[in-house]
Image 1 (cartoon, rainbow, N blue to C red):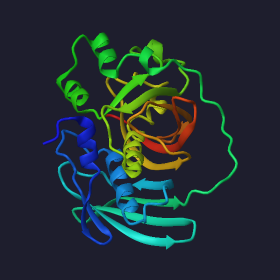
Image 2: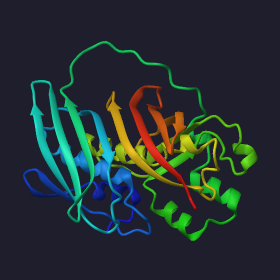
Image 3: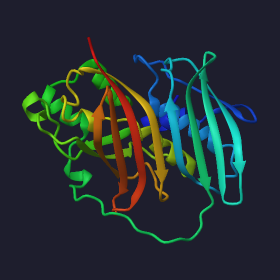
Length: 288
């Protein structure tokens, strides 16, 4: 039995092949209302990647969260081999749980080829070594962590460090720009399979992107006033990377309204290279 959270993440992404294009993924039994969306997205991308030759890294994915998944119930991933071209490979994945479709994803893989390069610069922020771990920052404010938070901190597969100190009062929140940024990396080695690193970062990309929508509304780690759910998720992968090395996840929300909020993120490595771009829309319904 694995005890390291990073090893558990790798194990979670290691799907069982049932047939040529059908895979089954575990869904841990946890005290959550729904399966974490990043888990489903990461597992679906593993399924897609395992039906390719492996010489074409994924360059983009587009996904929709259709129904909440049930924790503790296996998820079956059905892969459609849409296209195998000279330069691009396309896969469509449908995630099914208890006979119902809960998620679908389309992923495109591109054979590396030469081309020109440019990017906007990474924002200037303190390095992760100068910032407190998320659990330490929570303990500093709360004194002791509630049991649920303590359990989460022990099981978290990523070291998370907010670039700005967390806001805890309505006065601190009021007038804040809808932006957030964190340094992240897996808490242990993830091996050398590039697909595992891509899928692990896909998992992590859903952990807090919608934070940017909430920043002007309520403290991120205080009592939540909204029922939140991811609606869709898109990613573009620009360069190779390792998810067990530090990356900066810069997030902002350009608009929110009609019970929906849009967030976009850019993920950079320590050298300022833009690795991944992310977009997500979430549902925000006030709790009654």
